[in-house]
Image (cartoon, rainbow, N blue to C red; front, side):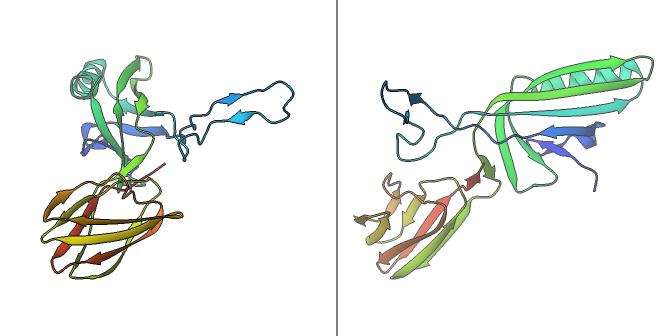
Length: 216
């Protein structure tokens, strides 16, 4: 399989570019420390809100082509007009089920002696997490206990219920119970953590959880 990149679902290889290098480094955590005189350990605020937050993701992609300067200019213009300065979903052929999203910047150069052109795509403001292409949908009809699997990124699902239903769940040492009428709901306190999440449902209708998973 030829290594490829897709931008908003469009293959860059199909546009005549050969992928050379890809750099998708893990985003750095948002950290802040205060050094207190007389104290041997600094005060760390990396998890000040109860979890680690991350800096925007930055990445770079390099492509090349062989051909005339005229052909090269046409190919660069096509890429620039479609993607430069745009908020774009970017996925690799190695992990096609995931995408990063950020604003793309484009630069280029051409070597007339070799007849070889290069195109560099960079991003400095991408979301920290890469997202799953497909939303996850989990549902249960009637009463019972539902186990919801979630990737690394914490996420609050959209809950749709067909009849009045009671939900019970636990996060850490905190227990919650919520009675909901038929409709679509978003409960900030119902946040799915990484791994297995358990919720107890009491009702006669169908309860559906819809969310998009993500990972670093």
